[in-house]
Image (cartoon, rainbow, N blue to C red):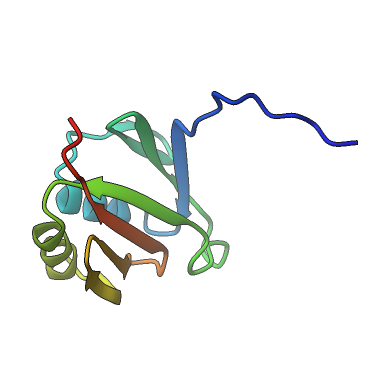
Length: 119
């Protein structure tokens, strides 16, 4: 028996588990120009548009590379990719038209798209 999901369901939170919580949170804060982090023991997070982006401390050996893929729409794709790379990201694929993809410091996949006239 299938369960019908409501049509208005939307993601509002993404939590990344990492053994390098502070370093990875700083990586995203600096790369995307996010404000100051909300924090509690074992957690740092930011409001990134309508989505809350959080980082939870994982025990050594628990976090695995590419445990999550994050997607962000940005105003200037080329500038954001350059900024990610300057902070230690690795290229998955270079910008093609309006899309690009990198790996963060933990090996998670981060895909970026150029915002097209959206507010």
